[in-house]
Image (cartoon, rainbow over all chains, first blue to last red; front, top):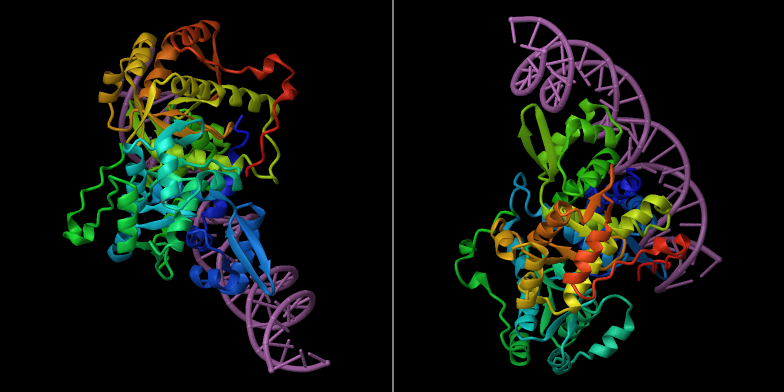
Length: 249
Length: 249
DNA sequence: CGGATACTACGGTCACGGCCGTAGCGTCGA
DNA sequence: TCGACGCTACGGCCGTGACCGTAGTATCCG
């Protein structure tokens, strides 16, 4: 009857501890961190963190890469990141919760990584430009690239065929953005594009954060190869003038 | 730094209790249930359930409609359902977890409701037929209807304009199916279509379950107005011959 | 107006699990 | 080979919260 409810509870319970939630949140950018770093982030002693990490491993939420005496932990897969985003959509809209600390919140809303692809207004800008330019088609399981879309990616330095062949997961699919409540692009192709942007110096990681920043070179590169690309900078205007997010229906 | 991790933990913690998870799971079909029904489903006393429901309400995961001396609880919104589906994707793929009870699992995989729309192979069949028939366009935030799509909905007895005007949420958007790992249609239009299918007797609810069944009349109606519609019935063949679900990549 | 029903509020009990102490194992550098 | 480092395993302390009993409030019915 209520057959697999308990499994859902198991997973949610794993994510429901503040220390573990902080760890998972920190790993959302797709990097791999050591147990000690995660312990610091979670605000607990290394011994405690070790226990948490073991439980997260057993639940399949984390994967580990051993290198010498270091153990690098990363998220268990894109599905885990997707599930966490789903929860963040809710967490961001809690009426009881105070709003994000404005400084950090503004940076994250502007541009950040979501596991291995871009989110925030940067991610949405890329998504919308590709869509309105007719570079995306709706295909089985998510988006596909039209012929012009293949060309756009090639101009940006990403070979769609190569990126798709490396992984079995969907090449492109929509992912709901927790800060903007609109979809951005996820999937192996979106990951490859993000990787390219970092390599080319178009986007820079900020330290100790999932926030990233679009450089002037990046803005030009994207705008020239992707007509219609816009990435609003509300900070340029009055920060408080953001449109009130429509409360969820 | 790790600013809003705690909010994520709050939400996940709410979902992480077996009793609450069972309640949420039972509400995924979009129906509204009373506290007593939910108590029975969760396997706890009504007093205990009352406390759980209050906490879920405060967290925004549930909404309530008071009618006389009954309080009907339902999910707080489509975002809540989406977040739960994300977790189910993980819960369904846990190597440590036993598989679904085969009988129930087969029924649910075939056709079920997901909050207020159809999921399972039925939902995917509708989604794919609309897509391959050119009745859907990719629009900002999800899908849109092409001119032929409007006609298809009208023939099926659903007025797209009316359905869209009733609610401010997206009319059509993809929703990841936890059993099939492919998108089906969500949104107010998908909900209206599901409602129409129930009214017309094309789809019947099964008791005490989110599973539904497509009647012969329903199969004919969908097939005639929606060329290309297919809804596999693996039960017609050897039940055990289901394709082994590809373990998550 | 009484009784039944549906639900919520309060209080006591108890167990799960988070926390850090110390201790033990494996890896790296000198 | 030895010491430093990263991490894990075990044990005891303690707080959070799930549970149900009893009691109280609101609504419907006869």
